[in-house]
Image 1 (cartoon, rainbow, N blue to C red):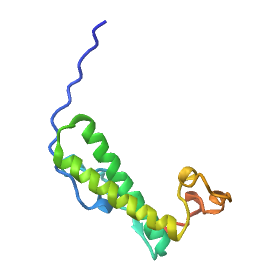
Image 2: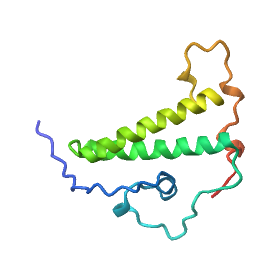
Image 3: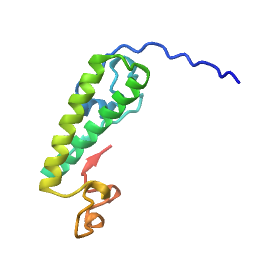
Image 4: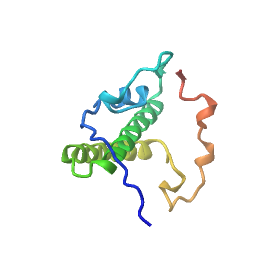
Length: 133
């Protein structure tokens, strides 16, 4: 059985390099962003160092996923691939710093741990990030 071929219009590599702005807008792509009429940007208020790092990790993760999706249809775009690799390296450094100074963000992050502390951290809905939307 022959399946239909999908058509994906060529998307130029026009990415917003400000990872916080990309997260707030919900798109990393300058030419794909259309503001929502009632949009509220994420505003951070007096974050602790730990909360600031968690927020930056979230921004990096968002940008990495956006680039991953782009590369699914633009696998030969070396500029995008190089930027993705840079973001991943920066994310890993930041995550390692966070893990060494605070705690694991993921249950599977440390399989040799002798204690189970994951449940002791605040949950996102407990309002500990101190943000307004």
